[in-house]
Amino acid sequence: MGTIAAMTDADRTSRSQRRLAEELEDDRIGLPGDDATGSVVVEELDYARRTPMFEGRRPVYGAMITTAPENLQSWSDVGVDVVDASCNLEDARSFADGRACYLVRNPADPERIAVACFDRPLLFEADLVLLQEATGALVVQRTPVFGVTRLFEHDQVVSWDGRSWSGRATARSLLPGLQERAPELEPAVAHGLLTLAIHWLAPARAGATLVVHRGVADSSFDTSGAVPPPALTLTDRRHFPPLLSCLMQRDLATLIDTQGAIQTIGVGLLSTATAEAQVGNDHGMRHRSAQRWSFDHPEAIVAVVSSDGPVTVYRAGEPIIGEA
Image (cartoon, rainbow, N blue to C red; front, side, top):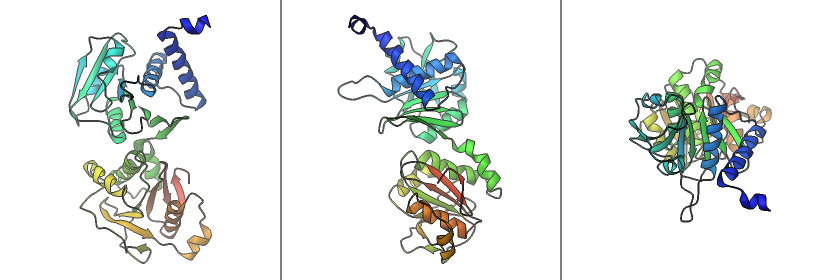
């Protein structure tokens, strides 16, 4: 009785962090870096998952952990001003909104705290993956939508779904495997396909089927409800927001040529009787039709994004990335 009553805020925080470290271990999520870095990561994840309530809501939040803060200005795609914080850690966190400003912590110099102020919001998963890859910093974020806690580290995005922690491979880490199975696919197109599917559509829970093929529309396509898109392409990152917006409002497949140009949106995939007899898939209509169409067209690459997030890439009727 007296022990609980006398427990300090620091004691409660420490116990919470120990529980979090155990959760990560139980869910087979390894902490990145050395012990000092891992300790700061756990501390920031714990804070992001339980940001203090204010006026009935939990604020969003973001932090970057790096032993080389000077590298934060190495990403030329965005302007950043790293400002030293003169206040304590708790107060400094109130300036980090996880959108356009992030707390900066250096495990090698724990007394120095800063805030990185960007010239535009960095809140999409794709933005933070690029930030991590460009700077090497570990990024913790509590998302503006749904309040999901995420950790961006080398080659994976770790997230908390309210029950457990899971890690998802990044597009860049999966790229070599796709290029090995589809060597004729242009690297920029392959990377764009994975980036759109994994870091734009999947986090938004936007179910979609993306078909990269060298042919023209034929009898295997039902184009009765198809929509001709603007001149958008997988090789231009600026085109991903309009594609996300459209695909969140439409079903069926999107056809893409081998140069990455978006050809048609809202196409039904029709399979042969042979494919229907030989290819079975119990993961829903979207996966089943994609895998069967892929069986009939072994030269094509078909990426399927499930409405609950996972991404599977098919070739010749077989999953070559992901598990269907």
